[in-house]
Length: 424
Ligand code: ASP
Image (tube, rainbow, N blue to C red; front, side, top):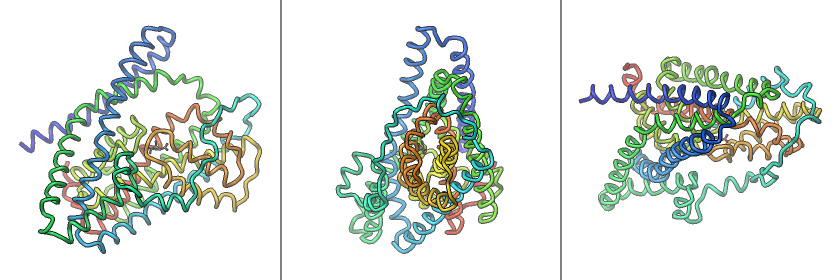
């Protein structure tokens, strides 16, 4: 039975990757040969691909709130005492902030090295209207927003941080009251089982969803539009690569002694999924699942740290923001001081906390980073056009950061089963 199950799983992973590559090929072909064919654009690209792709994202999103809510309550109940929970919480937040700061530093370094904005003739490029404006959220508000005024409202609106806080409190109380509230504990446990089953069902559709999403993206993305921004893109992608394959893997090897290559290989489908959807939130169920079944991380840790990470830990996003600062400063001929760079590290870290795990929000919080060092917010218009592909790549890094930090904390907490990791 187990063997059959495992065979099916490997099949799914492979199918997701085949779908990803096939989607890219079909998308590029359509972009090159059928960009002006109305039928193809209306019926296929903006019709079938759009509806099926978005439908799949919505199915994943449908899972998020009930899954996180139930599994966090169960996780907190299992951990039991609030002291251990607090210890895990403080540790994971520490790791999240540390890796984000590293990410911005890497981004600034690469930006200064590659100098993406040098020689850019600003007069040639039209800056688009930026919706971001200056309504950046203050630090105090970000902090206060963690506490839900109305937990039901938080659930209804998908305010993840507030949902996390409320679920943790409920879980701790259930653990404390034990027999008295057994019925409610069982209720949430069964809710968790239902949501896990639903996740499996939705995941079965992943290859079709991924194919349509990628095909639509590539069909719409003219390669020529990318040329002037090539250096900027290259700098962001290089910094993302260094963070993902360098910083994370060194931390992982040093602190857990796990084999980084093996980790990347096992985790790759989750990255592929994050890449296709550009949505950290939608990746939460798959991330928790993969960490448990392939890496060996106990759910009592990941059910708490992964949703939290998808909400507050956006290393990929802060990398884009770091490079964007250098790019726009160079393009506008603005000289930034060392103190400015420190400010960027601080604000990009805060922006990462304030960025929701959905597509393109990193561009909105970029306004806050630009504001902090006096860069023109209109500069965001420069990079808007090519942001989608970078959004995909940075989301993959965002969720890898969550998984690496979670694995480290699980290891330190005795919640990592290395035999699962070492199994093929
Ligand atoms: N799309 C990113 C995510 O979901 C957020 C962003 O950078 O826009 O993690």
